[in-house]
Image (cartoon, rainbow, N blue to C red):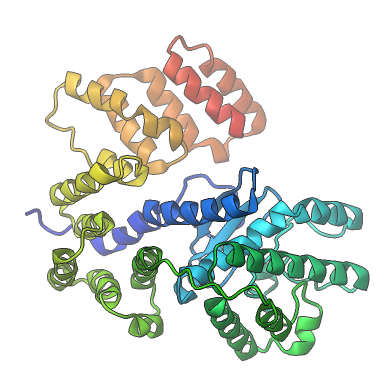
Length: 431
């Protein structure tokens, strides 16, 4: 086995918190994790089906220590990692997502945009918060539209926003009813958030100027929703959720939440934490105990992440490939294999095959530094000067003036290589 790389412990976060390159967003760093994305997509599909939602709704997972979810002006649902870690089961997360879908399905975003444009006093953040009360703190940089601090906005607007929140709450509760499940866990989540806000000094008087109803009013709404008595709890869903939650907790520093986990999820989270603390042997021993009685191939992906973070590249790639056998669309595992493929002793023909076979990654993640750096390496080996020049250009876009950018793009569009032209057009479209 290969010796441990210097600085290897730091790399494990890079692989789990797979940051998107050149993001212009003011939000927290984005987490790219296929297991979590696939699970959330399934939950959203269930919500869409029972509510007959025909809109395309995207989401992103943020690396944040605030218990929060919100919708932005582009109808993108933002889900914070801390929210996932504090949901006691998948139903709590489903309730939150249904609330945010409700904002979109009920056209609350359109109304909010109009109000903000008319007020001309706020940037068009247009962020609407989680059913669980959102992250309402005293830090103005974290508010992101969840609270209105200026007295210049009328009481009528605040009341209207509270009505929207109650509508979204009802939308969520009706969704639970249609799915024949209950709201017990969302009440637990609401109480958890209220306790944390009170600890931060967010009193009831401060709640008054929030766009969200009082916690007690929201819990009362849940208790009085007579039809919400379903018992259709999907244990397989919940097992999937618990592994995801344990993974998030393992990568966090939240010892309190780790202790509350049941087995085997606690051991799973501990194996990740132990690895981050430098003990690879004990980490793998714990993880292998779980793998003996579990066919969850995402555990193999985590094992690969751990091995890779400690410098065991070849062994890690083997486990990434095993995960891909069951989940061939796991692009993040593909990226890890691609960027860690050793080409030093390969022939030019073999390198050309690698160049061509990974273009799907290039077109899908053309802003990802890891993908770009690998393609720069391949281009140098193959003496593909036009590709090499373009990749370097993409890496420097944020430091280029608009006029220079447009001139270079037009020059690149003169290429006769159709794949390169496709990539040039993609870059031009998003800038």
